[in-house]
Image (cartoon, rainbow, N blue to C red; front, side, top):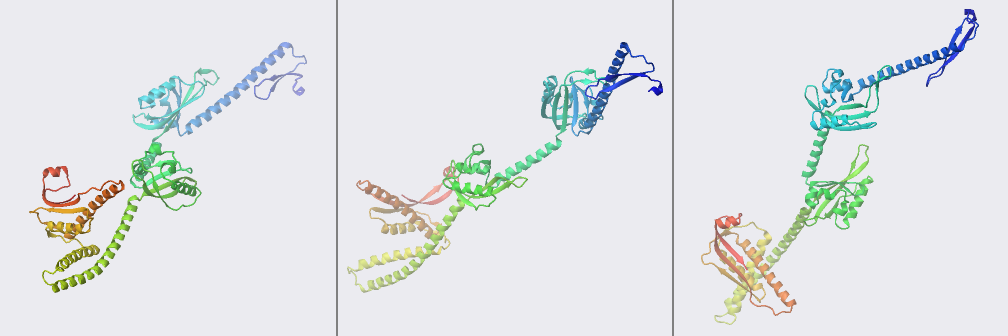
Length: 510
């Protein structure tokens, strides 16, 4: 310094909030010391220099922040609109493009509600703009957004309020009041995806409903998560009453619930349980027999999240199987009856031949003539019975031909009266002008015999009831068969739509 003629100096610290302190140094070319006024002037100069440096730093930070903020808004894929005091103060390019504006500047000073198409949404946003929340607040909703050309599209809106002030480059407040940020998102793709998902869901539900199978989704505890329409129809239990209930408590009768509990645990553990066949409880019907299978339902990670229980109603199938077994038994009985009837027919042939020979050796008027004649008649009736057994065992097709049903009724009455309890009388009534019928006489014979057997069983039940009650048995029981002509007219057809007008033969047993 002395080389440059400077012989004294003075220094003052420059105060800077949040920054390292600096020093302002002043040099002089005279040896006299700085007086008080010069020292104060130096301190004031140091303060002004500190304020200038701090202002410059703040301005640099503001410019950098504004640049970053502008870059952030420009790069946002969602539309962003800033509002204050009910007006748009800023918008990013994504918002302008989404709403069909050539540039973001066209949105400035616009009413924010002008971007909404639905009156309810307009009223809701206007209320939010008029009554901003205290402090930071956020609102979200879905609405139909309005483009500049008047077209609409589904969108999502999120409004956020922040209590702050706008400042100019000198950090002097220009506007006061909270700043609102409206974030817009085009929901067209989301709506399309939701529509597709809804179609898939409806299709899946439709497939579940028309599949004819009972389909349930249960969790590991057996609680019902899905209950399809077939389950409702079979059980009579509504979906709302089934959801959340344990499957074995709601549907499965008796100890079979333990089988389902074990099957669900096996599926949850990664094993495959065997199929089950159990009865379920129906509200307004008899129990149904269901064949069940249990399958796992995995999530995207492959973990088992629930169990799909599928059931097929096999009640009718099991009934048909039982009927088939009974038919097979009847077929075996028919075969056995045919064999017995064939052997018995051979025996009857010998008996009839012997009786016929005996009748030839007996002189007229002999006391033995009547018993021999009765034996021949009984043998002939036995031959007819054997013939029916043989027809039954062969299961021959019906051979329809014109038949006088009076003869069939008399034959059945005569045959049945010989085998029935003597306390029951069997009679018949045949119309004199009975029309011929085009039928298989053997089948009619069997039908009449079955009806007579049913009547006999009913009478015998009355006998047994009287004996148990120790009352005096009633007399006068009889089975009455009748064959007569009837006319089916229009009035009868109106009462019984399945009937056909015409002349018929009515066979009745009482």
